[in-house]
Image 1 (cartoon, rainbow, N blue to C red):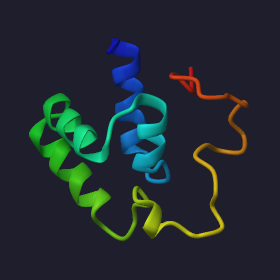
Image 2: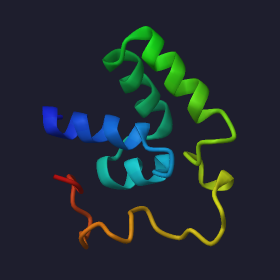
Image 3: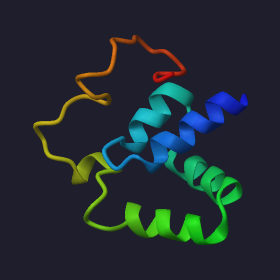
Length: 89
């Protein structure tokens, strides 16, 4: 995995509205893999904050917590990309 891909995965993991399924779709990493990656790449306190946020009611990282009207992985303002590994940048 390149540094650019790693940075993008971490960025997507921090975004509240980007579900784990989007990361799996683009990079092939399951939720458990993303958690392991975040644990190794972030400082301990940053990882704890991230996990607390993901497991809170604020985050929509899990599709079952999302509003059923949201049926896309990316922002409507983001340029159109079809199965691109790096979606922003």
